[in-house]
Image (cartoon, rainbow, N blue to C red; front, side, top):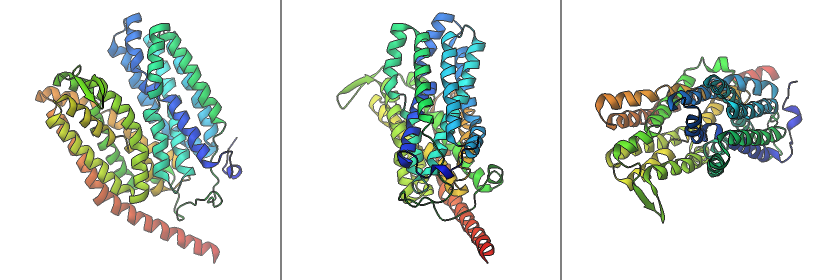
Length: 432
């Protein structure tokens, strides 16, 4: 049954309740990605499959979570967010329940694929719904929603680790899988699509009338591919610098070096990873909010430039334990904002009607960027150090910053003018 926006003009709690429900849903699925690392060693200890073989499951999860979001977004745009999130909640719960009983790698991989489909359904729906409900604050809304996924696992890391120690990883998979799935299932019933007409009573209105691009129309525009290339550059550059943080810390001899900041003392690598969780969440609403005020491209230029400078500084000064922790924090802070800036920019450019589908297509750039991660190891092995990897990562971020101001902004300005002119012409014709 198609869920239209006509009956959702005044949902319970208004649009802020829609945003809150989406954030909590994102927090509940975050462990499927960020909590996975806690289970790898216990699984290997029991079955002896080897870490490399077990981590294939994580790769399968990322691929299915990323590349199927456009399909799930298509269902959201046509049938509303509720049914898609209900579907995703069941799959997420089933995934970890299967992990609890997996006695073969094949079953572990099947569970990963199911979890990826479920997590992608929830992720794409919540981001798309936020973009639709907040046309006046897209950057902030997308950032807050994405922050739920970026930092959502922070509160459950210790409980999950403790339960693995006391009850075993199987019971932990089952308990948290069913619990997280039930929360998402319950909150899904609150989610509705906004009305198709501009909302005036709620104190906000949609941006000026513009053409509403379907996904097929969007991918035929040069603007989309410029955004896609920039997304791949920044995501790939950030992943090359951050996904290899453990090996980099080991090679720098810092993994276990004690670092004291503000009275807290932790090993350098643990400190850096802890900061990652916090700043990876904070950066998304922060830069999203900034972009609502100074523009998407200006914010992109600032964030990507900071990222480039931070990576270069990490390469030059990262062998000092304190500098390593602080500079990795800077790199993480200037990287996570892509998950708020690009969805908001996409909806600004191509309209709200198909925002879930269109943002989902752009989100596949994360999957494309992930394919570049192995090249970091290839470059490091070929050159004998991480310096070249840092330079490549910094270079692509600097290039993306330049593209934001001098290519993307002029293209979007021309496209908006043409879209408004076309729309106005059609309106005059229709009313004459």
